[in-house]
Length: 268
Image 1 (spheres, rainbow, N blue to C red):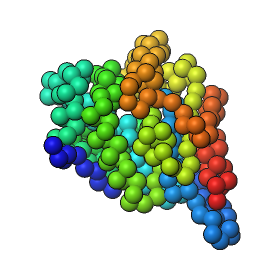
Image 2: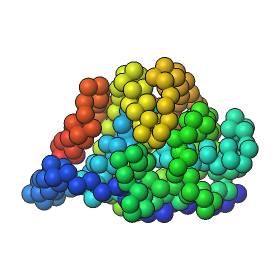
Image 3: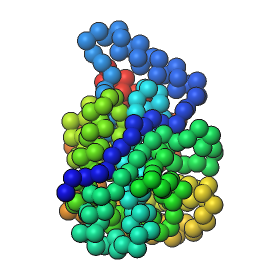
Image 4: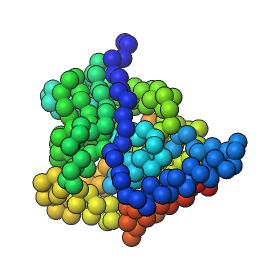
């Protein structure tokens, strides 16, 4: 069956901090001086849930003037639609059919939507409906790993993600970018952190969305999702052999972004 999934061009959220603007110009200047050496065109950022992939990837993309794609938003949007339609996320055939017949559009957030409580880096429509407000609901959180482990779903998503990467320089964040989606990426980064640290981050994110889960419940959910993601048959969660692993425990967002930008500069 011919897929009707499609992606619109997307860009990251504006990030105006002068420190990163200066770093961006320095990196570009270094690339110019080297003559035949260029900035990495494709940057893969992988890691488990709540490791900071989306925030870091978005800011790195803005610093470089690249497109940013949070691939997790695609899987979350499809999960939301499956639940809305009353489909069983564990019915792999149904999930594969849904992926093959659902129009998903991923764009930059609309103007004025980037408030302090907005943690989404992409605006996602599914079948013409805005899925963005629903991407972090408890129901989606509980089922997205079940949907994303389906081979037919991943196959379709990976195909589209690769097509988008062909359109220009991009930073792509997910769980299998460096191992499956962009195995030849110019730079691969794997962000990691202790499960406890990730649970605290996720709890803060959900609190910003007016949800108030206990730390224990968030930790339990991360453990469950880690197990599903790392043991699935297709594209399990793991660091690529040639990825640079960064443990982000105790590091601020700016510090992690700085580390990744240093890696970008080292590639020029």
